[in-house]
Amino acid sequence: MIEIKKIVCPTDFSDFSRRALDHALALAKWYEAEVSVLHVIPRVLMPPEAYPYLTEPIFPDPRVREDALAELGRFVHRARETGVTTEVRLKEGDAVDEIVKLAAQLPAHLIVMGTHGRRGLERLVLGSVTEKVLRKVSCPVMTVSASSQATDKPEKVLFKSILCPVDFSASSTKALEYAMSLAKEADSRLILLHVLESVFEEAGDVAAFALSDYRAYLEKQARERLEQIVPEGAREWCHPETVVASGRSYRQILKLAAERNAELIVMGVQGRNAVDLALFGSTAHHVVREAKCPVLTIRSG
Image: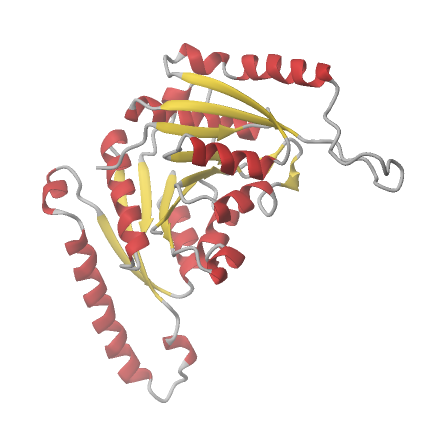
């Protein structure tokens, strides 16, 4: 099964990052992992035309660092009450660079972070910090949206319903391993979804009858593959629901997640080629942006 021993949880002390910490702590308890809570103080860059003699960024007043350390201590106080081994890290610089650097140094098995910052919906961090981290790191990343339900105790994070889209690629197979492991830890209902892209709807009416038969054939084939993809040993405790849908992948994923009240989506992202880095995988990009529940993205390489 999967191994999660070191978790990185970046924070800006917002309610959104506190929800991310609750998820990180729940996972840490299940897998007996350590959590590194990271806060990054941005460097203050002075205008070069005003200060031409400055060749390095100016760091904030020392009191800023002291205040940030104190806030970090308050932020992780509840975490330490849970018994999870927790450390705090305070860095100055670019948030994305420091998150990626720490994840590589540990190395991290998982990053858990919010998709919104201190000003919530007014400042969508996804597209800046979170999205850049998703593009740059190789370890799994769990993004916790602003819509994710808040909790007064980390142990209440359970994921009673987990949706795992499967396209039978290496990345989605790896994602399934995580989904099954989490389902076992949380005693969750697991839903496997395969989406047939909407080529049928674009073909016109002439071949409608033939396309209908072909669609039925593909749906039957996909459902059989979904049934077979779960390892024999896992079937003793895991009885997943299998769903085959047609249309745009991200729309069907979001639709089924809403219909089944999914509390977590676990999905694979293709390898880190130039197109993937630019778009972060079209489907994953849309799902992470629009999902009402946390999304765990897994790379295959």
